Each structure stands twice: as structure tokens, then as C-alpha cells.
Image 1 (cartoon, rainbow over the protein chains, first blue to last red):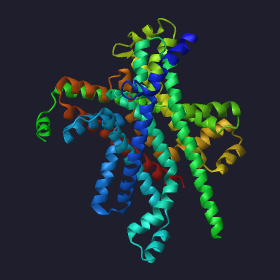
Image 2: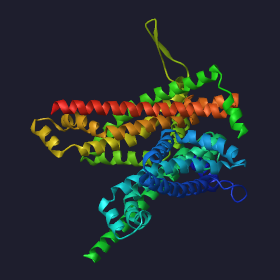
Image 3: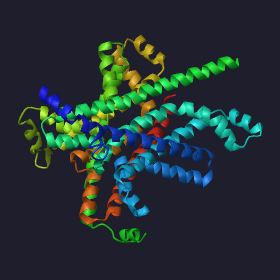
Image 4: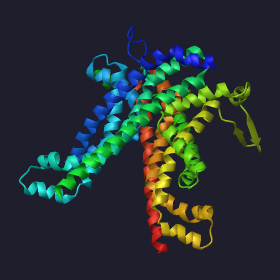
Length: 237
Length: 250
């Protein structure tokens, strides 16, 4: 048992932050950075595309729906292959693996979130639009000041689900050799050879803490928003 | 952009297209088996989650929490590397060697490779954690009066579930279930990490052999889109048939 635990304690710093500070950042720290970066990018992309999907009519809407459908139909892994291969060709520069993975995750996450944002905007009652427009506000102003604040609260659960998915999908960076948590775990595993169950269970535990922690945090934020909103309603009465 | 034009100018040789078709076939077979197994397991977990017995409720909740909050890749690694180290000596060798049973002169059943077994096992457990929640949502969508009516007819809890609640629940849950089946097709791509020769694996193999990256990934991407479109179409046909059937019942 002590031998089995020592495989974890001996490799703990490497699993947590890679070769840093002597080498590049890796391990769980890189997983967190990679996930946070793609979470932010996918949220912005999802918001922009979701608003575009709600405002567009006719063929631009059809085109946008098809593009979003494409990103939702292909495996994340396949998109990582594409960005890893295409980004350097398109931009004629050396793109680090982390960035191509982040780009793939942001595109897929953004495509899913766009539909949630679209549904959230659709869920705000038509009377809210009419009220804003009759006050002389432009469509963009109604969207910004009246519709989106209400829609975003409804959408919080789907954003959090998407972020949990992002943390899990960041493990696919393993395939293109980015040194995040899954990759360093596989490295340690092939070096040590004899305790694979212990290593992957420990890695699973780290992911579990990250993902369920995110879920708990979101629950508290939602409860806070919910009570704040109720409080405002009470004040208004 | 000349690189693009040069890349697009050449098609893949039939031999390499054949590799990709083999990969697609493996992806489709694996997806079908996993869809069936995860639905069966999903029904069991959903039933346990809607039970009032804590000894059923708690393990089912724990299962969902663990399998939904860890990456599929790590789960596959755990089953592939971890379990083989925990199994008794020799059993992995036995699992890895080819066993076949001849059923008559034409049909031979071949025991799947260890990679395929791990892929089926790992994917089924992971997918069941998602499928079961869709089924449970479907079960909650069935009116409480249906359960009471089943009880009034003298059906016990299990019979009521089997003959009254589940058939209606599956019907309600069909659209989200099909979404989960699409996820299963996409998730099979992760099994390339444990060396299963499915579509993503073969696309990378073709790429490495031919250096025709654009074509190799392009054909594989089209295959995935076609598989997803197939499920989408099947779902729409099923739903139309259900609507018709529902109309005649009323």
C-alpha cells in the first residue's frame, strides 16, 4: 500500500503543475487554464452567435443554423485534428498545441451555447420586447437592457453544464500531445508501469473535484441570484 | 492558399478509402452495441433513482455523480490499463488472444479484442449515466394517475413500471435519447486513445501514410456527419410514426 501511495506522492508536483518552474506549465494547472480560457471564449462566442441567431431572418439564419449544426455533429476530437492542422496553414505561424485545442473547444462550446442563448432569448415573453420598443428603445437596446439580463439568468445552468463538459473535453488535448492532466498521467503511467489503477483513479478524483466543484459553485450563484431577484420583487411590491 | 489547392487536387487511393470505410464500420458497430447496453443499464439506473429505498437511491446517485464528473478518456484509461493490472495473471492474455466459435459452416463468432471489450464496457457505463437521466425525465413526464391506475389494476410496482410507465416514458424521452445516441457515435472517437481502429484512428493512420491530411480528415468528418444525419432522420421517421399510431389509439 505504501508503495502504491508513493507512486502518487513522488509524482504529485508533476501531476499538479508539470515541469514548472523549470519547464513549461502542465498537469492539473494547465487543465484549469485550458478550461478557463475555452470557457471564456465559448461564452463570448455563444452569446454573440445566439444573439445573431435570434436577430437574423431568412438565409443568414439558415446558414448560421447549418454552421452551428456542423460543429455539433462532429466529434470534439475530429475538430481538434482540424484546428491543429489548419490554424498554422491559415495564419502562417507556429500555433502552440494548447491554442489549437482551446480554439476547437471554444468553437464546439460556442455552438452549443448559441442554441441555449437563442432558446433563452426566445423564452423571454414578447411583452418585454413590446414594452421596451414602446419606450422608444432600439432593438439592440431592448436586447441589452431588458431581454438579455432575464435570459442569462435562465441560461446559467446550461452555461455551467457546458463548462463542466469543457473541463472533461480538455482531456482530449492528450491526443495532440499537450501536457495537461491526462497527458502527464499517461506519461507517469508508462514510466512507472505497475500502478495504472491508482494513477488513473487519482486523476479521476482531481477531475471530479474540479467538475463537481463547478456545479456546486453554480448552484450557490443561482441561489444567490434567485434570492436577490425575489428580494427586488419584494421591494417592488 | 496554394497548399490548399495542391491538397485538394489529389484524391485518396481506393486502398486508403477502404481503411476509412473499415473505421466507419467499427464506429457504427461499436455505437450500436453501446446504445443498446447503455439504454438497458440506463433503465435500471433510472428505476433505482426513482425508488424510495435508500440502498438503491444512494448507489445510483453516486454512479451518476462519478461517471458524469470525470472525463471519458480517463475512464477508458482506467478500464484499459487499470483493470488489466487488477485482473488475475493470464486472464488478460486469454482476453487478448483470438477465440472463435464456429456456428455451422458459414457463421463464426469471434471473441472481440481487449481494446474493443474495454471500449464497449467504458462507453456503455459512461453513456448510461446520461441516458438514465433522460429516461428518468421521461418517467416523470408520465402522469401520476397512470401509476395509480396501474396499481388499481393490481399490477405491482415493477409490473406498473414495465407495462405502463416505461413504454410511455421512452416515447416522451425519445428526442433527448436520440441526442444521447448521437453523443455515443461522437464519443466512440475517444477509443482511438486505447488503440481501437475506429474512424478517427484510421483517419489519422491514413494521414500518416499519405500526408493527405485534408482528404483523410475530410472524408472522416463527412462520415461522422452522415452517421449523425442518419440518426436524425431515423428519429424524425419514428416520431412521425408515433404520432400516427397515437392518433389511431385515441
